[in-house]
Length: 377
Ligand SMILES: Nc1ncnc2c1ncn2[C@@H]1O[C@H](COP(=O)(O)OP(=O)(O)OP(=O)(O)O)[C@@H](O)[C@H]1O
Ligand SMILES: [Mg+2]
Image (cartoon, rainbow, N blue to C red; front, side, top):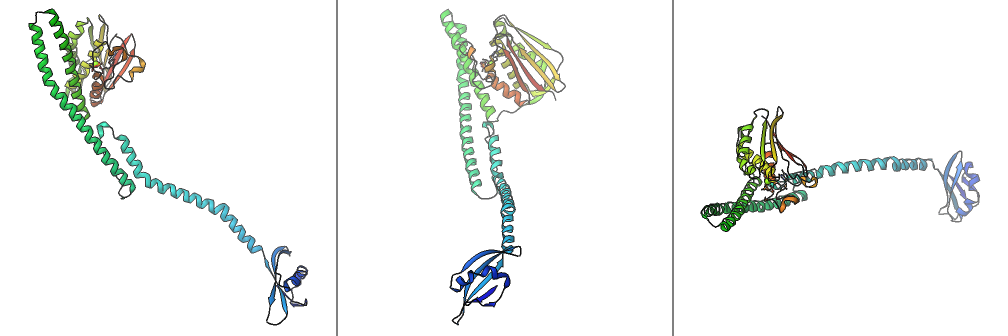
């Protein structure tokens, strides 16, 4: 620092500042403060010339110079903060936010996963609610209430289908037996013909009600497997026997090939229903005077394979994916052949209950090969 009075006399001298003070101290003595950066001994100094007033008349000019090194090092620190600490802090904050939000959304993800598992046949499932009493839990409770309402509506609908099918079955059986009696007693050929048409309608309707009843039981999980040791070769022979009359009407020959006897653990009635359905299809969608081959073999030690091959109308490639859907019937057969489009849907569910598979390959105009695979215990 340097203190100079208004006559130019240095009260506190500082020869280092002399050169820089000239011209500035007079202004400072007049009351005009001055700021300037000067270069001294290899360093930058920030200087202030200002009036230093005393009680006496004399005014003084005070010059204060301060090294800028400290400011520079402070600025360096600030630069470090800008380019290293702030990005680091941002990364840490980002990561923390990511992990916190992931933890917070874990319950939402879990709920979404359960929601995805809920299908028409598993409406009894409920979303797992988080422990915290927050908005997510409220959302879960609301969704669970909604699933409960859908479940009740679904059950009521299934019950209605089951009750209706059940109620229709009895009058249908009565109509059928009355029509059969009338057919036997009729002497008029025209009336006999009409009765036959009515009988075939009744037949189709009872098959529809039976299928609907089976599907409603499957949907409401009322269908259980009554597993017992079953000789597959004998069961298939039974099925072929029961379908032989239908095949004979169209002059279709049923060939049965067995390589060895196979015993599996299965529900006899459901297996029969599967194979009768499949053989029925093979007959229905074959040409008259053709042949159907039914082959049973071991695909490997753990798997029995039953192959039903017809030389019928076949199925178009774009329709193959749909034939297991309920009520689906291929375009070509809809108007020509009777059916409800439920046989394969039921067969597939029964095979799945036995942990088996149905595979299908078909060529339009050439025929269809259906393979049923069933596990051997
Ligand atoms: N062996 C086959 N050859 C050609 N088409 C077939 C064969 N099996 C099934 N299909 C086609 O798949 C459709 C669905 O078969 P599904 O057995 O489910 O119904 P459906 O035979 O029409 O009626 P039902 O309920 O009386 O069985 C059939 O309508 C038919 O178009
Ligand atoms: Mg069928």
